[in-house]
Every structure is written in C-alpha cells, then in structure tokens.
Image (tube, rainbow, N blue to C red):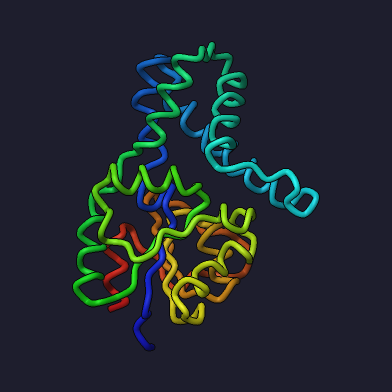
Length: 225
C-alpha cells in the first residue's frame, strides 16, 4: 500500500495527556483527582456532541468554554466545592497538559522523511497554540487545524474535511492518528487511513468497522513508512 503523504494527529488524548490534570486535581481534592479527571473528560466530549447535533450546531460554543462547563458539572456531580481560584488553576493546567513523551521524536522523524504533519483537533486555536508551544512541538507541525473554523466538533464530517482542504490530499492519502476509539472509527468512516493508539488496552468500538491499524504508542505511526 502506498505510504501516506500526510499525518494528522488528534490533540487531546493523543498528543496531550488529558488525564494529567488529575495530579493537580488530587492536590486540590484529595482522593478525588482521578475520578474528577475522568468525569471531566467524559462530560467534555458529551458536550461537544450535544452542541454539534442539536439544531444543526446553533448552540456551538468554543472548546475552552465547554471544557470549563464540563469541569463545573463534574465537580457538582462529585460533590466538590469548586471555588473561582481552584477553577482557574485547573483550567490553566488544561492549557498546559503534559505531552506524551514519544510525540516529539515521532514528529521529528516524520519531518526528516518530508511527510506533511498536523493536528486536527476539537480544541480552539488559542488552546492549541498554547499546548503546542508548552510541549515544545512548534516548528514540527505544518498545520494546526481547529474545528472552530467550521463550528462543528468531531465526529461531524465537516470537522474531518479540514484535513483534505488544508493538505490538498484525498482522505485516503492521509493517516489520521487518535487515541480515542470513537475518533479513529469516525475518521475511518470519513475515508482516512487510521491508526488507533490503544494506550489503555481497551476494546475497540463494536460497530462493524476497524481502524486501518492499532498500536500501543505514537511510535507505531512510523510503521506506515
């Protein structure tokens, strides 16, 4: 099979560890940090789907605002007293999520092979810019694509279409990489070649479609080349 001509990465959960906020959450709310980080993430994704599918996207809000709303919900659900100071600390931590350690070397290897690279993310442009710089990945990405430009979150086809528009390539010429099974599935349906990075040893979605390949880390991207 022909090698991909571009690689697009999901950001949150794939390049950046969304659960790394659990360390600060544990300091602020002892014994509740992990539960908060998981519920926060789940509600965040639920909200992206809600605002995309309701009234043809009329209720769209930027990812930053949905992230704040989901944090507030998660704290209420867990019975945690989230004051303004702790909210600001947790939100600021979300701007500077820890990057998975192999990401930088994988991007460097792709650049050395002259492969077009990019991010295709639900994150809004400011969030992505800060995350990329904080992780030291600036200069290694040809494209940082935010669904904010189409006001539709993944898994909407308009979100995935940002990749072919930016690169000038057909979806089948692009490798889309995600740690989120739902994202890898929808990207496969869209027509991308896909790598699901199964960091947490989970089953894939049971909807009759499999990703092109499954790996355990971002290093598995390089097997396509």
